[in-house]
Image 1 (spheres, rainbow, N blue to C red):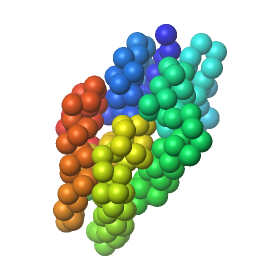
Image 2: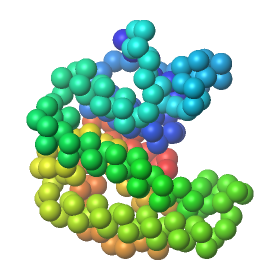
Image 3: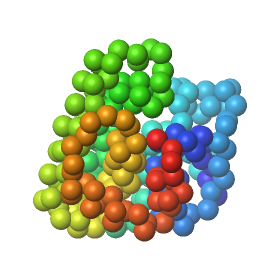
Image 4: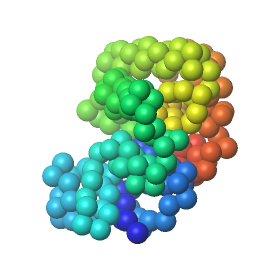
Length: 201
């Protein structure tokens, strides 16, 4: 049994928690690792961190890839090169493009952090976030079901959490009917109510 470190309110920890529910995978969860333990496991002192025996892994999307591969879940992370590349493309897009866009407006309007009090910057952040969510909407219109294809995959897990955060952040947002329909398709998934649409942004 592996150990997952990180508070369950963290969006990146919630990716792994949702995946574990999808996999029906038993694990031990340490939601508040001591600072010295965390710094030993991850030089960045960030969560989530996974320990599987002597193997330690950090970065949430890498953890998701590892667990899907460990459990042989080729439906979530395909073996075929092109199908896998598409899933990983959208996972990487979430971690780089989408996360960079939302940081300022989320910290300003949800976390209400004093370092992000510039409302003009928050509005610019939301505008960029909206633009990227429109990119996702176009992709869902083309794929006609889930992000990378007609089947649910790791791309839907990481982007489902980002979408829940977008929906929870105050501000003017476009109506994205394909994103809305896809989000409704995610609702019956194992772990979705507990780890995604649970009132935590």
